[in-house]
Length: 247
Ligand SMILES: C[S@@+](CC[C@H](N)C(=O)[O-])C[C@H]1O[C@@H](n2cnc3c(N)ncnc32)[C@H](O)[C@@H]1O
Image 1 (cartoon, rainbow, N blue to C red):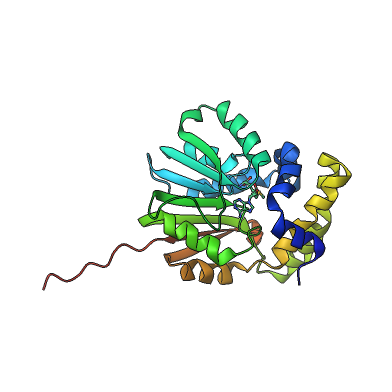
Image 2 (tube, rainbow, N blue to C red):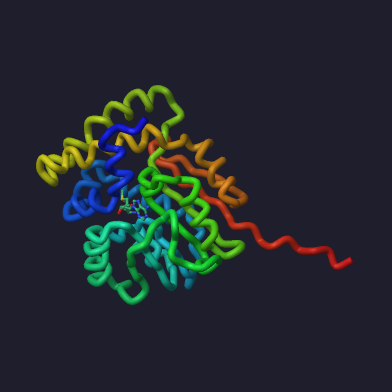
């Protein structure tokens, strides 16, 4: 049963992220104790992003992953997000970067992507899937817009397999986000960040997430655990059309 805060997130995600957008990058850095840099490096190692490819960044927020995808060699990056506030900060950041001409950020819903089938070489997302009201639908949408042979890459918080790590991480993760929210955004920030641990509590563990990625129609599904499993990167490939035998 979702709490009041979680229900609010589900029904008014853009308003919540509009509220935290101005200090999102600072809060993110503080909350992850700088680990976002290491997770970004791991994403760069594992994500199959081909040079010159057209890549979709789902839930691009302030554009951090879009910029990374461009640095990895993507020829064109399209970012979509529900929050105009996050997009505004992202656009300003992209405009100041050397990749401005290759990144385009626009409003769009992860559960109803405004793109035709097979229109991207790859689709990626970072720390978004906990927020969507229908995870299966969002994964299916990412699979739909990727061409056959293209990849879907999802980075998200997860549940560490070690009971010891879970025992340390779970209480830390309950207490830390509201404190960082208050420090960076004042009293309102504390409430806004309280949804974070709640969204993780209902999110599938790495094996269940892999099953969902497979159910979305992807193959060769694998995942990489980062920082003892606090974060996971799931990767799947859209199957190539079956070759009919010649005779
Ligand atoms: C935690 S932030 C992550 C932003 C960015 N990917 C990053 O790694 O910094 C989650 C983002 O997902 C967006 N979001 C949540 N639900 C969404 C949906 N259904 N469709 C598109 N974006 C969504 C939010 O507006 C927010 O910008």
